[in-house]
Image 1 (spheres, rainbow, N blue to C red):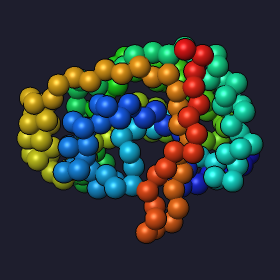
Image 2 (image 1 turned 180 degrees about the vertical axis):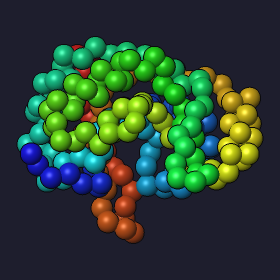
Image 3 (image 1 turned 135 degrees about the horizontal axis):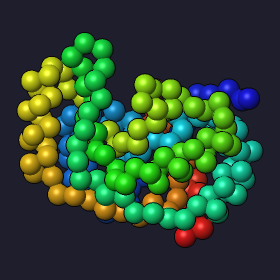
Image 4 (image 1 turned 60 degrees about the vertical axis):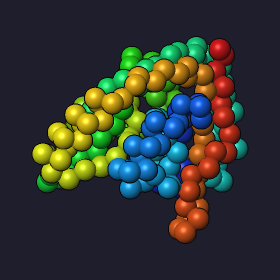
Length: 181
């Protein structure tokens, strides 16, 4: 087992042409707006950047066996954290394809299982913000949902991403791993 770092991840990134409505929300409510692009996390923390070359061939092999699938971002949900702190996220539906993909990729690096260690296991999601207070949460969810126009896209690859230490700590794409399509 290799070591893991919070400076790298394997993610699904929606196509840039649908980023605008997501980014408008994230810019206003997501404290990680600057660091992360819109994404659905599959493996995080992940292997150090220096190990990307050595693990990439295994990801390429597994991804060649994956068929592309469509997901829709139409509903906002939330995670409750300590106290009255919440993360708001878009629910990718159907979630099954993302869950199967995550499981296949994790089989390559079994110790990179942090996203599965939650009470309900792995929950595919695209985070859009944080809010404090139940009343603020309910108000914001209602506001976001009422004006949201559903977005669909085809998942046909995953991305290896990495970042440096602050102040240059913005995630960048190292490589895209395409599916068999």
